[in-house]
Length: 148
Image (cartoon, rainbow, N blue to C red; front, side):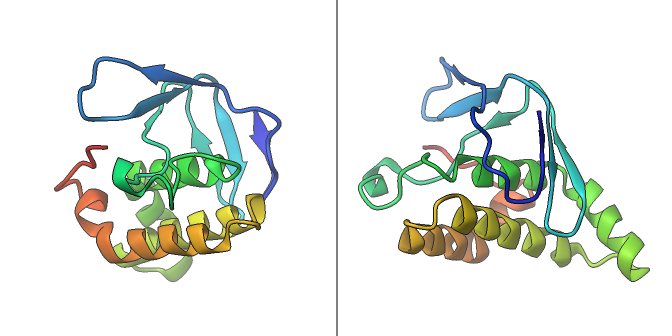
């Protein structure tokens, strides 16, 4: 599947992975090539694992783990997983590597896509963005996973 910037897909093929106690894991069932806001073409490969939106069950009444903005959270998880590729991408633009640009871009890109794909959930989108900006560093740098 190939998607242009902010294009809403008709369907995203995912499978739920059972057996991971304490974790909610989904697997992407087909390659997705997504053009991001800066023109970068992000490959989300078949077999990529995601937890969609990392919101604890206690908050599901406020922030559901999935919805119309589902693609935004898959893109975000892929950008977090591909941080080396993103750092190289940003180094090519700036001529130097700034390790924080890649995380900031991933968080902001998620917010852009969430706002476009689900404009009626403004508060939810904003809270998700602030959560990854404030609390996403341990997950981004691989020091912590997010049990859901």
